[in-house]
Length: 159
Image (tube, rainbow, N blue to C red; front, side):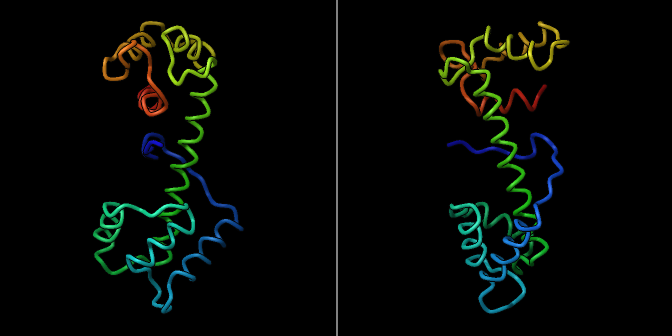
């Protein structure tokens, strides 16, 4: 699995009321002593409950340096969860688009696949720009293909 950044594309997404309620319930369940904030350990447990994985030490340290080691209050927690959810939705959308263009399920796009994809979604985009984007060396594998979803994310975010 790969890591995806939400910053590649700005989104405005709001949680549904039931989802928002779930986030608040998770916060309250993880705030064992009713301190009004989550400690590092509380935050780890909350992330596991909501996303199914333990966050890395880098993520934990980054959040707590930002919040000055005081803990994460409900408002900040909800903002962190919303941004993470936005990133997940964006990555899923990009993965879906890549899969639609990878018609032969090879895990990469050839130049022809790439051209056909952009003729469908951006017919006015010049072929010169499409070729420039495809031909950047760091994007292609040994066979000269656009190799996989992580590279596709870079391409989409630059166009």
